Amino acid sequence: MNAALILAGGKGERLIGRDKPKQFVEVGGEPLIAHGLRSFEACAEIARIVVVAEDRWRGLISKCVERNGISKFVRFADAGAARQESVFSGLLAMEDFMRADDLAVVHDAARPAVTERLIRACVAEAARRDGATPVLPVRETIYRSEDGRGVSGLLDRDELFVGQTPEAYKFEKYLAAHREATREELARTRGGSEIAFRFGMDIGLFPGDEANFKITARADLERFERSLERGPEAE
Ligand code: CTP
Ligand code: MG
Image (tube, rainbow, N blue to C red; front, side, top):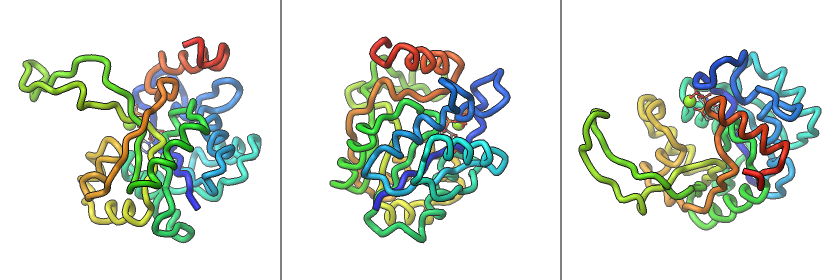
């Protein structure tokens, strides 16, 4: 059966003026992580949930798991220094119960607006291939620049997509890719599908959801607060 890997091991350094990493900031009476956990709890395709987090936040998460009746939660995994190292740590923590073709569904705790429907779409696409990641089209023009001061290349916007989570991967292949990668490669990786693609996995793209944005800065937090008050349609 498929399992969710919820990434809550980051420090949220770009969201200033808060006394805790963004995934634990309360919005609508619950820490952000709770909103995502509820969607995974509600999704029939997901049997278990593993949460990557530093020791100091586990008490808060456990309380929130209890309060929200997250019965699929099974354990914590240690946070890594970079996001992809946290993914690796989480995959290792699932090894005893995952079969080769079960899907590890990786999600950022900092994306509270994930829906059960998006998780289902992700699982369906990944089941047909080695993995899947939700994407949005790029709306702005993107230039390539080696030094940030002059244009050094042109990119075709039609070939570019913005990645979101949840992303899902066939467990054995994805774990093997992490085992083969060097520490430096893992530390440099920005998106979960980078490592999958580099090690030859066939990764499908499926339509993401504008409302499933990642909380990075204060304005994102305010946007999520507003969407809870008025419903996502009001965006
Ligand atoms: N994450 C993680 N382990 C890390 C880094 C990030 O589990 N070492 C998680 C974050 O908790 C978040 C998700 O990965 O849910 C996306 O990362 P990002 O938005 O970059 O979060 P932070 O790294 O915490 O924030 P910042 O980059 O602003 O410091
Ligand atoms: Mg980060």
